Amino acid sequence: MAAKIKKGDRVVVISGRDKGKSGEVLEVRPAEGRAVVRGVAMIKKHQRQTQSQQGGIISKEGSIDLSNLAIADPKDGKPSRVGFKTLEDGRKVRFAKRSGDLIDA
Figure 1: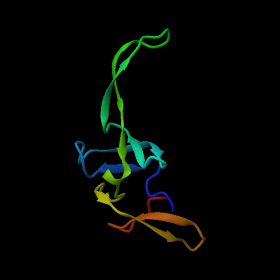
Figure 2 (figure 1 turned 45 degrees about the horizontal axis):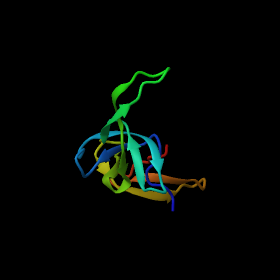
Figure 3 (figure 1 turned 90 degrees about the vertical axis):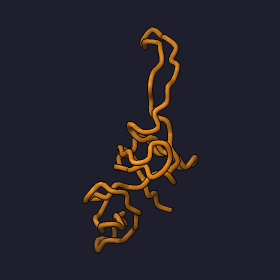
Figure 4 (figure 1 turned 60 degrees about the vertical axis):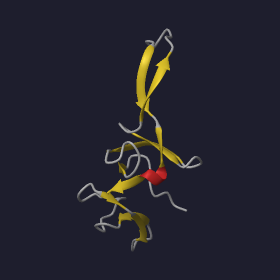
C-alpha cells in the first residue's frame, strides 16, 4: 500500500493531548505505524554532558501514531483524508479529498 503520510508533509493532529496542532513531518516509521512531527508530542529527555554537548534536560519531539494524524488540506490547512489517482502521464499522485487539490505537485 502506498504511504498516505510522507516526510515533509504538513499534518494536523486530530486526537490526543496535542489535538489541533499542526506541523511538518520530520520522520515516518512505517514498521511501528508512527511519525515524528515538528513541535508536536514534545518530551523531556535527561541528557548527560559530553565533550561536544551540554548536559541538562532537553525537549525533543516524540513519535505520534499515524492514526492520530491527518494531512493538512493545501487550500485551507484543515484536516483532510487522502486519496490516490493516476494522472494522464501515468504518475500515481495523492490528493486531498476535502478540496480535490493535489498534494504531490
